[in-house]
Amino acid sequence: MPRAVDGTKHKDKRAKVLKLAKGFWGRRSTNWRIAKDAVARAGQYAYRGRKEKKRDFRKLWIARISAATRAEGLSYSQFMHALKLAKIDLNRKVLSNMAIEDKAAFSALVAKAKEVLEG
Image (cartoon, rainbow, N blue to C red; front, side, top):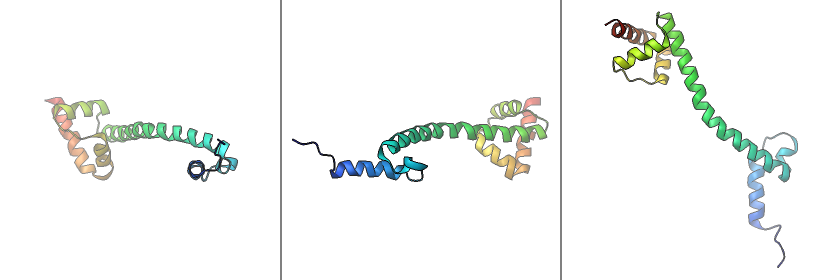
């Protein structure tokens, strides 16, 4: 029995990979052999990137909170510790957003944190 090289499934698989490679540079977007490797590598980068994105945003939020608390005369670690003691459960994303958009509310939180640390 001869080997099928031009069947629908075969073409569909290649079309799918070439569609994923659309926009790639040079032959990576048009040549099957090169495109399949490029798409595989792009998938690995995308998978890794989805994990890194979470880390990067957490770093950003911490940097923003730290800057805002230092302006109020408190370090980030002291502030987070005081919030835990005060049983205020706000995540870093929300705290970061407060520090940027609602400075009055954030200052009230810092004041509460200072109160808890002193008492």
